[in-house]
Length: 124
Image (cartoon, rainbow, N blue to C red):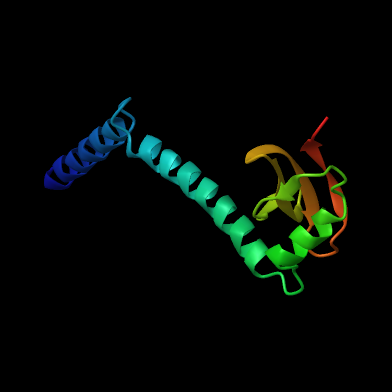
């Protein structure tokens, strides 16, 4: 008789715990999912940054700027500070094209090969 009472009590406690864990808005599972998604996004950003930092034969920003300068044909145009980025799984420098203090475009330079990967904007 005592054994049956103990078993019933254990079953009731377990059932209450299971029901309580699935209460909408109060579920620790919902919070855990959000934490995992946030952690995953942070890991992707960290992995991209680490990938860029771990490249051994990467051009310096000055070298990237020098490579980009080859493609400037307009008088009075200068280049801004290159920014290292990863675009479409390729590590590149984005070099701003500046005229009269205004950013009018950019030239994208492969950070390893120095190859011109294109750009946007420009002077008309």
